[in-house]
Length: 146
Image 1 (cartoon, helix red, strand yellow):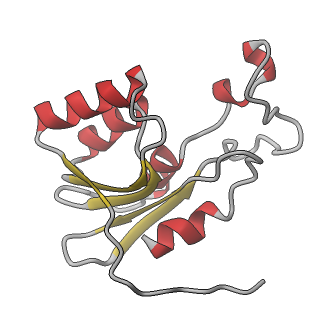
Image 2 (tube, rainbow, N blue to C red; image 1 turned 120 degrees about the vertical axis):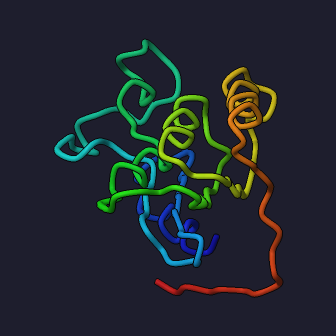
């Protein structure tokens, strides 16, 4: 989870920085992602607002951390892998997670637990055999000074 948290620090989102880390069955890091604009779309040109007209908010443009981690993966198969994410995945990222073959989602927080998106995500994971659980700290502290 520490690597997912570290990855989230790359996000330019002023409100919610999310990171994701995909690991193999052997706990080897396979890919990382964070929420941000697609490659080639300037973080300064596109909006980061949460309210307003749809085209003036971030929601139509931002690529979520989980999807970014999946798209950044350059290997063949993710069958049986796990994804650590700092925020429970939305329904759209969940579709991609299921399709990729990832079998477990470990999340840090679930602040949107009662939204239709998360409820749908949980239904899809339960139906497809993808397990999910909240991260439990092992009691180790990591400090990064900038």
